[in-house]
Every structure is written in C-alpha cells, then in structure tokens.
Amino acid sequence: MSTQVPRILAGLVDDAAVFPPGSASLPDAVAAHREHRASWYADLVGPLLVPASAVAAGALDALIDPAEGFVIGLIGDTGIERLPATLSLLEPAGIIARQVEVAVARRGEDPQPGLAELLRLTAKRDGLDWYAEIPLTFGLMGALDTLAEARGRGMPIAAKFRTGGLAAELFPTPVELAAVICACRDRDLPVKLTAGLHHAVRHLDPETGFTHHGFGNVLAAALAAAGGAEVDEVAVLLAATDPAPLAEPVRAGRDDDRPLWRGFGSCSILEPLTDLIRLGLVNGGLDR
Image (cartoon, rainbow, N blue to C red):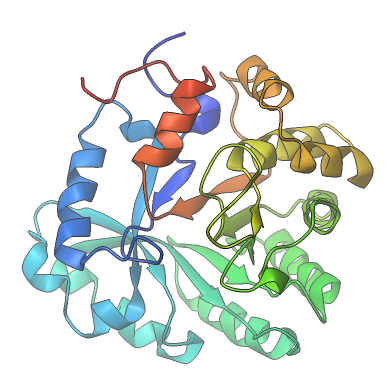
C-alpha cells in the first residue's frame, strides 16, 4: 500500500483540537493545524473546527494571514440565529468556511422549528456544506424526512449525530446507531458524527466506564449499509471488538469514495492516524 492516505479515508477526521477533551488553545490549534495540512497524512485531515463564539470575539484574526486562505469548519455554539453575523466576519479576515454545524434542538425538544430556521439560512448561503445536529430522541425520523426533502431540492445539508459525551445516555447502542445509519441510507442522506470516537475499535474507557464506538466500526458499518445491509448486520459491525473484520472491507474499498459517512471530529489527529497505521489501513511513520 502507498504511504499516502487511501481515497476512502480522505477527509475522515476534522481537526477538533479546541474542543474537549483536548481543549487546546486556539493559537496552539491553528499552529498544529498548519502542520497537519503540510504533512504526509494531510489528505486524512478535514478543516479546523472553530466555535462561532471564538470567531465573533475576533480570536482568529491575529492568528491568520488573510493571504493564506485558512479553511475552517464553523461550529454554531451561539445558536442558529447568530450564524449570519458570524459568517459575515470570515471573508474580511481571509478565512474560508467549508462547513457549518449547528444543533437544531436539545434532547427531548422538537427538532422541526430549529430545522426550519436552519433551512431558511441555508437557502441564503451558497458554497457551504451544512450539518444539522439532531438529538437521538423525540422527532428523529421526522427530522430526517425534512432533511431528505430539502436535500432532494438541492440544498447542501446533511445530518449530524452525537455518539458520546459526559453521560451514558449520550452513547447510542450499536442497534440505535445502526438504525440511524440505515435510516439515513434509505433517505440518501449523508451523516457526520461527533464525540466519543477516540479510537478505531469499540472499547471500554477505564476512566469513565463508558463503552465508546470505534471509528473503524462506523466506517465498516457505513460501507455495509451502503451495500444494502440491514440494521442487525450493521449493528454487529458496530459492536465488534475484533479489528480484522472491520479493516477488510475498508482495505477492499481503499480506492473508492467513502459512502454515506462524511467523517467525524477528533481533538487529536495523531491518535486516529496511529490506529489506522496499526490496522494496516495507512502505511507511514509519524517520525517522517
């Protein structure tokens, strides 16, 4: 295999260095992101994820040369209604937003009002990929129907889900996550995930006691779902702790575009890269 990142892994890991549990300072995150973008594994790395609150506060301005075309993903931590004002600050600073991600509801709330507000904004802004973060609770399937209908009309919007956090209920079971992946597959709706995907293979975190999903599990599950697998088959892959059956389908499709799953944010780029090297999915060394 080439030391370059296989096509199926391109842009898999967005740089979420400033978010917990890493919580790097913005200056450190910007400097490290430049190094990632200049590295041999650059094709693995998506944009630096930056909270809208930091952009609104001008925290990026002194760190970016307007001529460099610095690319970010904007995380709407200040809410949907403040996104237009925040986006208007980027172009004068020479910052390019590739994507916008924002929660449309809290757990237990109806996601439809927030989705309607986000879709109105999406229709007014060209050149961005939008991700609506939907709670894995009340109103989920109706929200997916709304997103699928909008995407069918040509709107560049997709779904985003949490797969971890600081409480047990924020970790969906393999069956729950499989059902969501298959529901998005059935609606031709791309998926982005966030939180808890710290390693390639499903594992128990001894510090928290939570069992985390593996990003290798999710990739194998997405490939299976895209190939027509049903929820129970997808759930088996999400629950697997043996890396071998997860790596094989990825290796077989290494030259293909990644279906269904847009990727995930990680506060570390080197941790997922190291796991991919250990699984034999990327050949390379971190000392090169």
